[in-house]
Image 1 (cartoon, rainbow, N blue to C red):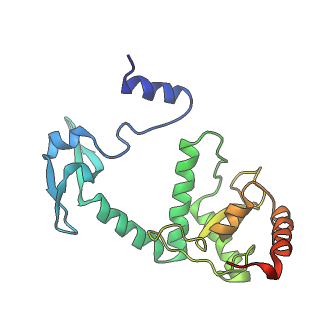
Image 2: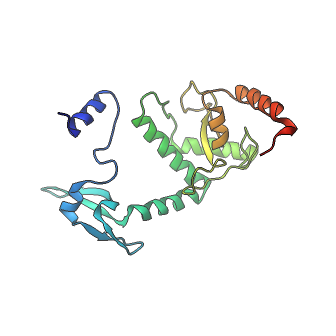
Image 3: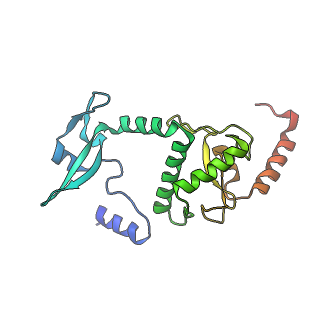
Length: 205
């Protein structure tokens, strides 16, 4: 008979990682704080399982667990607002997501750049081109929480067989990055030219 613990151990041996309670449904929350709590932001009383853990602190005798005052929904809205305010804030969030993917997905290319190094690359590109995507020529955006916005900025590796490292990074819109995927700028250019030539003036949306 299988158990959750056995599944977690198996995934860890395979180099994969999974949260024990990926959806926040940790029963310890109910034991420590009761079944419901009022959100300090929206003022609604919600299940305690909809509140995220907060960093704990230690006393001389024990480790004290804490929970966020805002519900998960309100925290997500605030994070989306905070990381959409400026391109620099947006890049910080994208970098955090990339590093998290590297830890959780086997075979993912490593990120060998710090936030400061990444921002330095971004500023050099902005000085030359502004917020214009170097592949598509469209103006890049930095909006979170509004779905899959194809003009949003993404961190692209010029050569997909190399790491996220100096000399191999450019900022392009998400759509261009998706089209390029595992290939080079030249391959993207050649295929885009073929598609444009094939559709031509006869294209109808």
